[in-house]
Image (tube, rainbow, N blue to C red):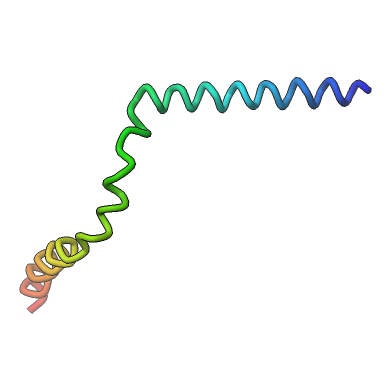
Length: 63
């Protein structure tokens, strides 16, 4: 029976810790922008263009 009390105390304290972490994240704005990660995948061409620009100077330096 004593282990049951220990498990209840551990689970409630773990839940409180997760709640505190969630509240801190919500206050810092962690969960405000939920649309841009889904839209970001559509703009892959811009990322490739930036990578190509970065590769060009390196190729010129090696030659």
